[in-house]
Length: 346
Ligand SMILES: Cc1cc2nc3c(=O)[nH]c(=O)nc-3n(C[C@H](O)[C@H](O)[C@H](O)COP(=O)(O)OP(=O)(O)OC[C@H]3O[C@@H](n4cnc5c(N)ncnc54)[C@H](O)[C@@H]3O)c2cc1C
Image 1 (tube, rainbow, N blue to C red):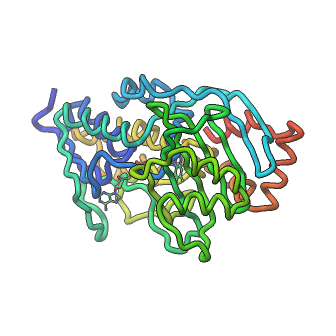
Image 2: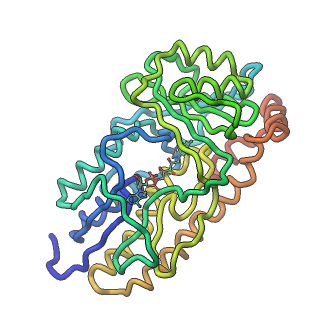
Image 3: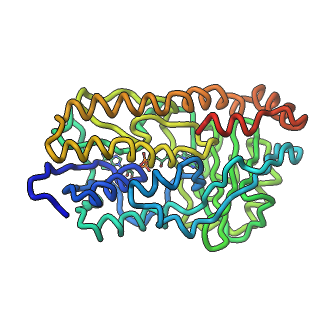
């Protein structure tokens, strides 16, 4: 299936976007190398809740079957510090699977198909990348960012719905079903200078500081797996800073949607599926690299503009005290257009 004369491609970053694109390109016989700074398998800060990506998109990349045994999430329940505020059936079911498992499965598939993976190697960006190199490096660093993401897996937490959302002062956490009876606990918080804690203590301390002390106590008793604990800071939401001309970017490297939507991974898969035909064409000599960069930017911008806009509007409601109070009142009175917002961010 491999064409001797195909132009080779190098993907920098082996997360959802890079790995799924790598698999898609190998399925088309294109020679591909992925350069990944970390090693596999590993835990990552992520709610591990996949919603809004179609089976067709996953099939076009050749990764749909890797999600066949994922947990199916159908119901969500929202709470604030005083108790339940909303309970809904999701407009379309979501999938739950850990990144530890999913990334490793995609790595195995990529290698089985003859892809070259260089793990533990950081690509140094220095001006425009050479032709045929594309960036799937995830969140761009922004030291000014106020956000801190914390995640861990619970081994013994009785969920009240497939996805529980808990809203606090200056932060929120989602709890959702993943494999082997585990629950993903992933929160986004405004960073605080007064909390000098690490590991599981950090997640529990941030919850308490947000006014979610009772939940923090429950999580403390629910068996937080220390291996799964991860944290991340220094990132901003929305369209990411444009890199040097001629660069092709996808996934979070292109744009970041607010994590509460549970849609970042879907956008990473979708961006890989969108650029795949352009890259196949490039590999066969049909179009030049500048044309790939121009068309991919324009296609991704058009596909994601509406959801990023809606997410930008909703985000302050979850993360500012006043916004959250409004959201809570609307939710309690059943006035929150939940299904509309869910669809508009997809
Ligand atoms: C708190 C939080 C919760 C979230 N919850 C959810 C959720 O529930 N559902 C959802 O769909 N999305 C969620 N997301 C978003 C989701 O994690 C991302 O949108 C998704 O991982 C993006 O995939 P990606 O491939 O673009 O980047 P990543 O998965 O981040 O992969 C990028 C890869 O590039 C590598 N890399 C970076 N720089 C270099 C370099 N110079 N050289 C080589 N390799 C490099 C990194 O090591 C990494 O492996 C959440 C995000 C946060 C912060």
